[in-house]
Length: 261
Image (cartoon, rainbow, N blue to C red; front, side, top):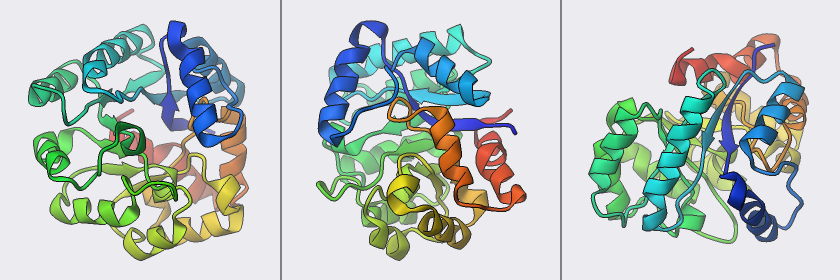
């Protein structure tokens, strides 16, 4: 079975342990990988995952360019295994130039983590950024958390209404714990959900209900590495007991449609 993971975090070797430790403290559970490129590839190989979309998140404006430089380097190092997304921050001077640089370097999208970046996804500064993306750069957004309101599903519904042509991937089944809001504001909308770090909290049956209500053609396999190993992320998707055709869409066909073969 072909597998294309659309959600993997990576960090430079010298800071990976520190970053993973911070994330473990924030989410209060032990992460399964160390966040390095070598360990990511080992996790992918163990599960037979052929490709992964990789990214890092700039929590401060001054981190944007170094993070994107790192992602450009990683993409060049493993072009057959990785698709890379860039990062942006609305307070970065010259943000439009950086978006142009991301596009010119062949990075294939932009990843936002609003909870860590402290940005509301529907605030005016972000709306101005979305205007510059057009439909050539997919946008992945970490979605939902009961502790914050930065990436609540109702906010994404506003973005979708203003920018219906954007390709947006709403991570964590669109809501990461805010499932009532997902059903109310996002199910059936023109937005992709990824499966990262959700099925084990939702439960396989409830996750399958979302897949069938939203459409398997709008669901993307995602590991959330290093939060989990790829073998466990694959097992989570299979636990939903979907049809072979639905699994084929989720595991690779939908991602290939967005990011190319």
